[in-house]
Length: 526
Image 1 (cartoon, one colour):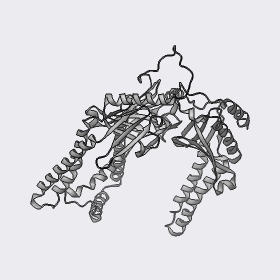
Image 2 (image 1 turned 30 degrees about the vertical axis):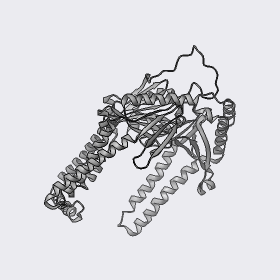
Image 3 (image 1 turned 120 degrees about the vertical axis):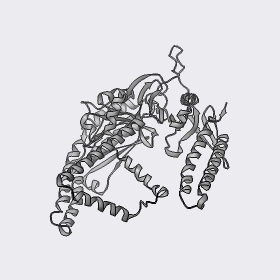
Image 4 (image 1 turned 180 degrees about the vertical axis):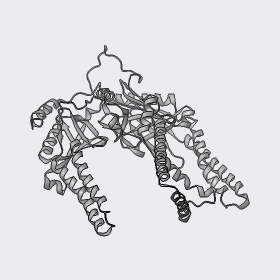
């Protein structure tokens, strides 16, 4: 049985307002140009009204021609005014269903429903727009149909005494960002994006004024004038001006970071329910994403060069679906490790502990990287010593020494580990990054060696992880082969056709315990 529907009628109003917005800039450009002579304002008005009329009609016809059909096994969307396009996505292929409400749709009580298939980008399916209630109901229906498809294979009879599956997302709040924490987070998100916005706005200055922002002589004259003014000041005033400029830059960057953080993460809440993890965030554009726990492929724990010194980290889930064009879903953007630990446990993973047997990258790999970087700056040093003014060669020479020291120090943080259930990788010394994946969800293992690596006896081990990447670099070749053998044992023992079934229906692989036992004896003993 199929159910064919249309999106919310108010979608037409949003499309019409979008047409008005698109018509504003061309109309302004005509009004301040020479097109039409004395009647250019009428021409601008006529062009603007025509663009709005066309946009409104197109929006209405597009809304009338867009339908979506929900069947027992898939969702089908048909659209197109002149040429028709129809796309059908089986429920079993849908990884996540998220709701997004930008400012204007949110004001009208509408949301965009996004069906993420794991293909990424434009290949994902979206419906714009449904009412908030319709969007939530559709998300709930897709989840139920997807789970029904997953358990369609013969299974043991259900226990009548077993509790029914919950029909809502109410659950335990695992993490939330209060306004005070959000402010602290924003101070660490230093950004100079405001200057990029101002640079883009400069492109339109010559449309409304007689100033040619691309006139090199204009800027040269202005800088020369300012330079003459600065030269008349004393050395203390010049130093004070430089400090004031630097402070102003820091203030602007900090304010920009705080504003961006508040806009993106206001009301950030991560909830754990029987259906998975639900993340809500956003001040103007509100997003509501639900990630089933059994579809979390791995974890990424990151930090920043400054925030690391204060004990702040971020936690992301690696998933087949994308989050703002990123591979990972951020579930705790600014948290301590004590706050991250319960989220990790709830996702079915565990953090490395004292029993984790870390292995460092090969010392040969470390030395080769240091030699490579030193050689690059060494060539620059020789060139500067021959052609540059006296003493200038000390700059690339100092950078060569710094590069060697950085590589030697970074080796201390470049580690990897594998145990009976998980694999770990850690790298980075200024802002350490740690990746964790479960062996059950590794699809492939590859040993890659370049010419130098083959000669020196080390390799990079690439582990196939759906929705992300996982690599262990500089692994001694003998250790890499043992690691590959251990992972292949898990892969051959895993039934991937049942792996992503919902928790209540996914059986444990039969041969996994034997493979893990063999791994413990053969690998951890080395």
